[in-house]
Image (cartoon, rainbow, N blue to C red; front, side, top):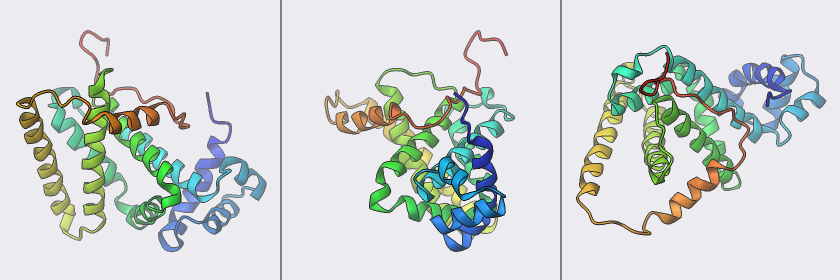
Length: 231
C-alpha cells in the first residue's frame, strides 16, 4: 500500500539531513526541516508520529531503497555470492559518503536503550534488502542465518567506516574483505561440525519476529534474476 505521506516525508528528510549532521536527529531538527520544506507542524506530526525516531527509521529505509536501485545497475548475476554482498555493503556506504556526520548521529540515536527495537528493525531491513537484491530465495532456516551473519558483518563495517580517515576509505574496504573472508572460513568450519541443534534457536526466533514485525517497508525485489526467469 502506498504511503500517503511519502512525498511529505521525503521533503522533510531532504532538509533534515544537513541539520542532523550538526544538531543530531532530534524533534527540533524535525521541526526545522519541516519549516524549511514548507510543511506544517501538523502534517509533519502525521508523517512522523513518533518524532525523531520515525525520521531516522525513514532515513535508513530510504538509504536502503537507493542502494537497491543502484545495485540494479550493476552486473550482479555474473558475481559470486560473496562478491554480491561485498558490492551491496560498499554501495550502501559509498552512497552515504557525503552524510557521514548524519549517519554517525543516527547510529548514536539508535544505540540508545529506548530505541533498541527500532535499531533491530532498521538493521534487519538493511540486511534483508541486501540479501534480496543479491538474489537470495531461501525460505528455510538459512533465510535467518544469512541475515544474522550479515547483520554482524555490516554493523562492524559501518562502525569501522565511521572512524576511517584513510584515502578513499581503503582501510574500510580491506576490513570488509577480511570480515567476508572470516564468514567464509566459519562456514567451512561449521560444515564439519555435527548438528548444533537448538544453539541458534533464540536468535533465529528474534529474526523471525523482526521479519513479521510489520515495518512500513515495501518488499525489495531481487536484482538478480532467478534461473529461467525472463529478464
